Length: 128
Image (cartoon, rainbow, N blue to C red):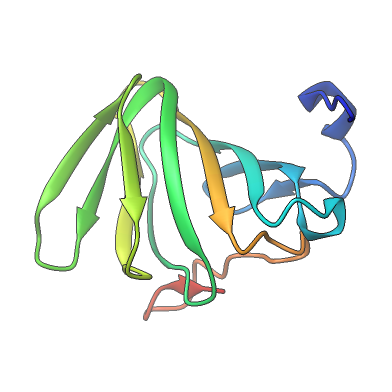
């Protein structure tokens, strides 16, 4: 058993600025659990086109607000208590709220190695 705090991660290689916020990688591949967990912050007023080609992801909103838009144009508002699931390696737009950051607990299968970074300048969307 181990206990890990977000405070331990801040200022280390597990704190990743992903372009539109921060990803605090609480549980990664080297931890040996078979899945990964991140505390994800999506800054208010931002938008990113994302796709996880090598991971399935479920995100549970613990605070704030935002939205996810699928490639058919359906917008799903997200607020505390909501979960969205990318069970088909879905390409999607992720947006922070108009006035509030979107705060998520993100679960990845398989886990992230911890070194992955988004490229938000890629017009086709960032993927890893």
